[in-house]
Length: 584
Image 1 (cartoon, rainbow, N blue to C red):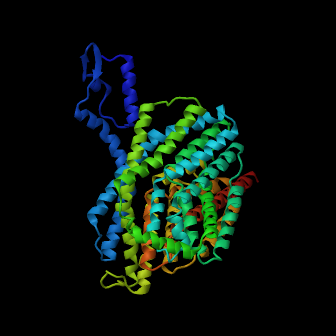
Image 2 (cartoon, rainbow, N blue to C red):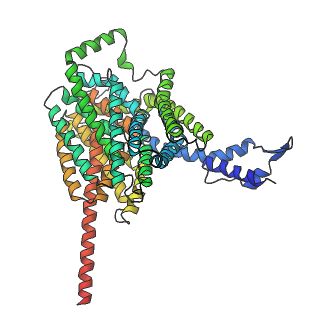
Image 3 (cartoon, one colour):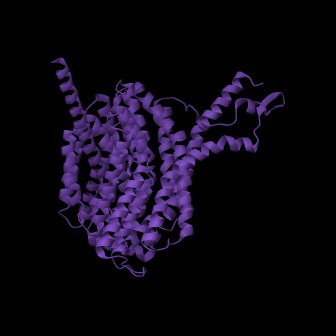
């Protein structure tokens, strides 16, 4: 029979594998021991390993299948049944989609095992061992690091190869010649947001003033840039960058750090702990990208950018870079995204906190999974998800305009075709949001926070409806070549008014809900669809859909919150009248 020490090891093995439904009992494992050189060692048959791992792998695989498969099936069926077009390069796209699912499964598991323990440990220990200034500096650097590790950043960088330099020179140079600086600026915005969000948690400040102070310069810069015909074309990218930053790496790591700091300062017990950091991490990068575009415009001219692009085209065909994927380049990109972040977290843990890794073997295993998952996901993204999204977006225009290579186009009358395109966008936005796992987690938190007044189901449908209308407006903007500020200025002005009318709880929930809807699947898919549609209808650029998909749920949740508050007040007034009647 095993001794107490072996029982502990068995327990750790099962806990580390996160198996909830394990059919192999402790006694069954113990019976498989053999004595070798006086020491007892556990030997597992292949069937035992399979039974141990299959529930674990099945749950993780099912999570990613639920996120990817319905969206891919919807795009494929819409293309075949409505647009009467077969899927181009089906083997490549299906293989890419499979790589996306496997890559996300490995990446998310590696994130929970390899990176999250760092964030939790540093967040809990850092405020008790170093001054506040050092804490905020580390929070700032962490915000930069997590931005480079976001899977969706790769989709943003690759989008530049789909642009025609003559249509939008400043936008083209930002996504090509300045792509590294662009990601760095976005990272600086996230880092600053983490610092401000942490300070807000420490002092218990309201989120509303931060929203006002951040939105005013963002909207002011938008009005300034829309006066210039070339700079106006960068606005879609700038506002889309706010959606790209709040992904599966940034949100859990910065929240773990912020909540840990607030808890150490005695501020982490509030139900609102953690809310607001995601909001600021969405708004600050928008300002940063607009400032970068103004700087680029002051150093070069559209004519110089076009001449430089033609020079590059003469030596290499960069317009096909979206599909040309070198495994070596993807491997290097995966290492560059994850390894610097891990090294930084390790240095903080050892040099600043002077602590050791709690479970080094498990953490190293998680980091390896992160890198491997990032590489596989990046390859699958280019070959599968983004390729399918771009293809669907390009063919979508055949419903209402003549398209080269598509027989009988336009397939429908102009009005019917436009209606089909908008309905396609609405269903895509609603379906992708309802399937988002992070939204379900937020729904549980909100239902608890409001004591059931704001039900989880109500929040999910409010957010999904907002995203659906946002993506629909984005498609409308591309089809009719409408300026993005025409949508952003009135919508964000309405958001400011609703924010002022709403209570703190609903403001926190509404503004953070925009962040949870833009995951590693939705962002590249919608981005590729917008760019594909934009190229098909000869639009200048296809950005802006993500920006409108972010403001949509903010408005719908705020409106729902105002209605819930009204119902609560109405109920209280009715109860008071009943009590007064009984007293009389």
